[in-house]
Length: 442
Image 1 (cartoon, rainbow, N blue to C red):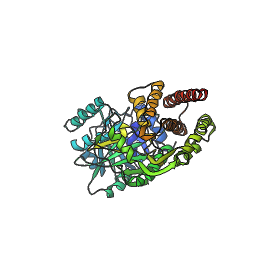
Image 2 (cartoon, one colour):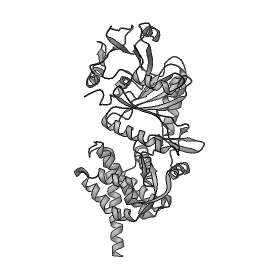
Image 3 (cartoon, rainbow, N blue to C red):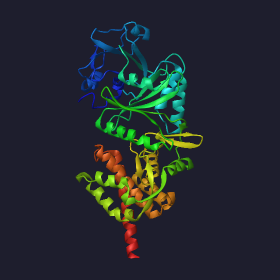
Image 4 (cartoon, one colour):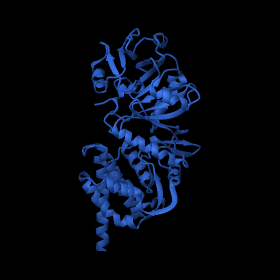
């Protein structure tokens, strides 16, 4: 496996700051689990020494830098060896189960770095506020593991980002989705010394991650008229596709779907009308389902085509992952980020269904039966001015699209999300068939 074509495990997220395809040289104190995790990512490029619990800087003449884990080495000591780039990070919650690498330059920067995490539940918001307050205090009592990245020269990512800003920035790193997620990638926040968020950065190495990040980069210019991030950079750097966008101001949006959410989705609808069957979203879905493993899903879509051919709907921008953790609210107005699965010419109602099912499944732990019931209630309410029948048809389209996405990313039939969404689809299709039989008998 090449370091340039795979996402490093969370504990090695700091590799994004090292030269591409670097060669890691571990000391005898480094735990075996880290050496093992690093093995597939150990290239033949610039040598980087990795030292665990070291009390002094050790740098060979042929090494481009070093990474000091839980060491007592100071930034001043590292710079004394001619290492011009020196950054210290707290690793939260710990290095083996890393989620975030928080820069320790000053309290304002450390506290701002926790904006990498967008909590949805009230309890999680309180926890984040508490750790942000702790991060502003001296003493380092709020973290267990820390590491120092010290290099002879700044990494490619910081060299490329520097011209975008008028002052120096610090990077906070996120390890991305939990290990096992096929689309996992690292990300970063660019923060100035006052703790202001200057940019959000996505770091894609795997084929899937590259595909969705490139798609988002292509999407963003078409969203200039709505509240969405602006694209600043999309460039290959040291074997990583780096996409930089402006951050969204505001705070975490309310969890419950309400008027502000509805108003944002309304802003995505254009005056232009189209037959649903002619929508690029349906055309792409037909292509994605043209695979033996998705034959049954393709049959369901074909059964829907007569209804879609008669359904006139407004051309609608689809976010694709409209969920609480991808939203901000400011002045009562919602904005959305993470447009990796977006579509500029899609169908209405798709995002609202996604929102309700994501919250139901991931936060409220709905059964598939409950999920189907809630979607049927939504359809009966004639959402967004749609008839109940058209809303139900679009709900099935959403489920087909979601399953096609998961399957095309390589998830197996045993994956929890696929099982759950298939079950929701099964419940809705069963009731749809029963209703059609009742109409036929009548």
